[in-house]
Amino acid sequence: MTAGAADSGFEHLVRELTPQVLGAVVRRFHDFASAEDAVQEALLAAALQWPREGIPENPRAWLIQVASRRMTDRVRSEAARRQRENAALHCGVLSPAPALRPETERDDTLILLFMCCHPALTPSSAIALTLRAVGGLTTAEIAHAFLVPEATMAQRISRAKQSIQASGVRFSLPSSRERVERLGAVLHVLYLIFNEGYTTSAGAELQRCELSREAIRLARALHGLLPDDPEVAGLLALMLLTDARRPARTGAEGELTSLAEQDRSLWDRREIDEGVALITAALAKGSVGPYQLQAAIGAVHDEAARAADTDWAQILALYDLLKRMSANPMVMLNHAVAAAMVHGPRAGIELLEAVDADGRLRGNHRLAAVRAHLLEMAGDGDAAMAQYQAAAAQASNIPERNYLLTRAARIRDSR
Image (cartoon, rainbow, N blue to C red; front, side, top):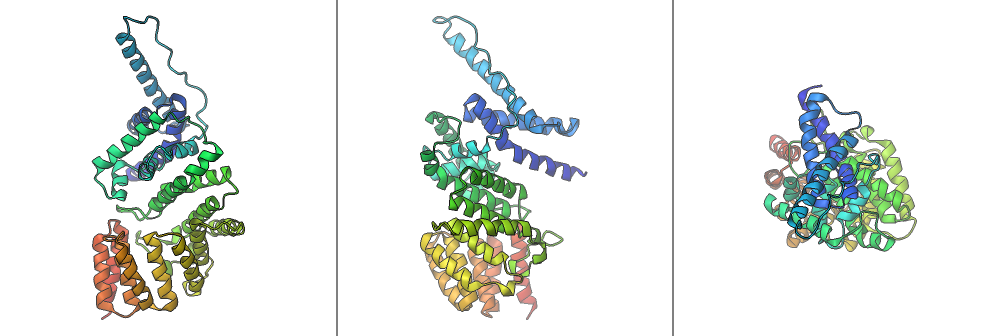
């Protein structure tokens, strides 16, 4: 194994284990902020020791034990400090540190997820904290996603951890009423984690599969907890139907391949079949939500044997419903694409005026990229090339940027 492959394997393992280890340490010591610090220290110790000594047989248990020892040291240190300060009033010996218990195989990630979405936090703080604690994103990555300075995001996450600590919330799955209160935030966070894995916000790689896999794992666990909730099933179906296309999204050199140009024989039929079954059952329950509609759109794409066979009229009808239900500008953008495929590119271009007026996608490369695509469909090569170049200048994901530049070059060279 090369050094780069070893580093990548270590990074993937750590990202997968971090929320599980953090959950175990929070459950044991009931101190979210200090537990995360202890877990980070354990990860640093692993980064130093594992390359020399090899990955232990049970890396999860190893990390939990090291982090727990760090927490034990802090408990003893804090107890000793308090004892010194109160020596004039109290006497006695230090309370023993919590003993390590053989619970290293229990996965508390789902509890951690609901804790991070506690109503004591604002939605933006809950999302940021969950992306950090459960999604495994760095503070810098979260700051980039929120378009704020890293120092600002670090303060936001720190305040969120303090709010969780001050709330006195027990480390256990919430009651039925509390689940209802937090479920929307939980679903949204899982959706964001999956999307960041499927198309990274920045960097040299198009996707980060470990994030997508973790989002799917958590969505499965949530579906197991709430099997009758159609939106939970809808989100899991959406993830599976989207992830099924992942093997065909990139070429031999890691370059982005558009949906229309993908080799559909590479799509994961098992994920597609599971996703279609989930969304079919969810829609039959009659309580339709935005994740179900997005999953239904994904199913229409995945069930088309060729791009030319795609039922764009059905997709447009689904986007019409989704647009009434959600004012999300990305929904408006995709609705414009569907309208262009059904009614012609000019119809889609006209709908982009509303996206422009909304303003939330101003400076986002996807708006310029869609406009370029529709202008190219309309035969306006010069305008399309300019928009592809503008989109490339705004994109921070290198494979996406290269794809957009390639599209612009293709128009230029076709003259």
